[in-house]
Length: 254
Length: 254
DNA sequence: GCAAAAGTGTTACAATTACACCCATGC
DNA sequence: GCATGGGTGTAATTGTAACACTTTTGC
Image (cartoon, rainbow over all chains, first blue to last red; front, side, top):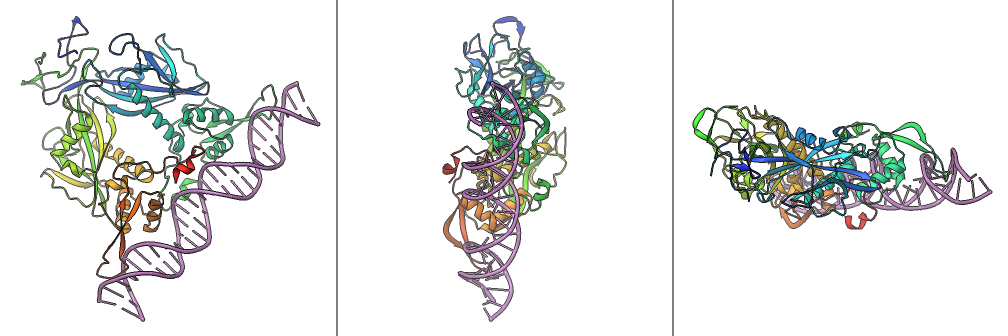
């Protein structure tokens, strides 16, 4: 589609210039960083997508992202690209997912893309640009490139990590009741979890801790709920040895 | 074909040529595929490294790998690079690990590298080139670039997956006794596992199955050991819900 | 018979699920 | 008082670890 043309995008004033060393034996490729930003919104797990206005895939929805620049790491690149969509400080967690390299993934020419998983806590409501919107991960619109399957990878990663790490901190507000946390877990996991057991598992593992405060009951009354918070604001593996625990892991486990 | 004719590294005979579309807004980078090939050898987990003969890092040990070519995926590229080291058919498993993008990771200029994890069953003994050798993962020599930490990532990935998947199939020979399998798991996990419990856990999960045959006892006598094999030669998640099992997962779990 | 090696029986323990019951509040 | 929602008590279930004991072989 754009075979080795000396100009970019039809604009003859922009020359093709490699920004780094390259040779026939070391061919270079544009590299982009993509972000799968997830948030639980209204009891539903949503992903942030923007609607493409130009070909290819005009009208289809794509993941936010953009080119890797010469002096930044992929992680910095994702953060920079996201800055045009949301405030980066609102991202409570960001981790690398996978790299896609199918030569045909972009019809304009070959690009390599590395996807990241980003999480925004439920209490925030970032202001989005006009072309950007939240979509339920369970009912994606028509997506551009391979972005639909990348969302699937992100979802699998999040769901797995909710079970054996404390990633929940990145989806929950600073303090919350167990009922509120349950709603977040149910939305993210896609299946039902009881508040009773969620509370006990996370408390026993030391993932949650009580703040000592209470939330006022609703208008219908009811016992006031205790407020909790996540004990750590960074990713921790909380159940490292699902099986085959090393012999003396027991003490360290408590 | 190659619009630019700047030079690389001061050598005027090597032109700088982008092989794909690129622009100031879409800078391109050489991309390499790296392989962390692991094998249990003599009760020890080893990684395949080759010794660099030229700068940078002359004399240091590096992961096998090389440039991504214009028409191949990263997975195909890893397989192609490995073909110069071992027979690719000996690789029982290959999966993508992570992508490193630190602009300073290669002193010659910026490159992006995507690492893969490859596993070779214990019964094979590939013929290696002269510059290539096995090294214990627990006692790595001086490594080049960021390859030492990439080996660390691979090790963590393998150890985690031994617990909740059937990856063991890629480290074990076609058939084996439980004692032999135990040795492989101990080497790969880095801590002790009893044959008794290993057998029961893997049998109950359906990961192992008896072949019906027996291995002859050693010269010292002893009850002949039953031979087992992995039920599936491809990666399967065998313990998908470490916690927060969906309500009716029980039936599907048996 | 005896030593060696493999595999099973059994118990103990840990973690999770399920469900009944008690607690604290608004009206 | 009573409905509502939150939290705890307790039993059942599952899965793994530990260890004794039985089985099967070579010598």
